Length: 96
Image: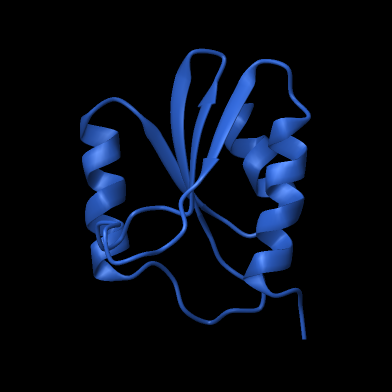
C-alpha cells in the first residue's frame, strides 16, 4: 500500500515552502469550504496554481465537484492539476 494522502500532502507542502518564490495555502475541508475546492492553493512566480492530491495507488480520480472547481480555475486563467507526488507538482510548475 502506498502513502496516505496526508503524508503526500505533507511532502508537497514541505517542497513548496522550500521555494523562495512560492506561497502555499493548505485548504482544510470544513463546512465553510466550497465542495470540490482543491487541497492546495499556490502562488508560484506570480502564477496561480491549485492542486488536488490523490494517492498514487488510488483507483479513483477527481470527483464531479473537483472537476467543476478546476474548470473554474482554468477559466479564470489559473492552472490546476491532480497530483500524486512532489514530482507531479514539479512537472506542473515547470512544464517542458
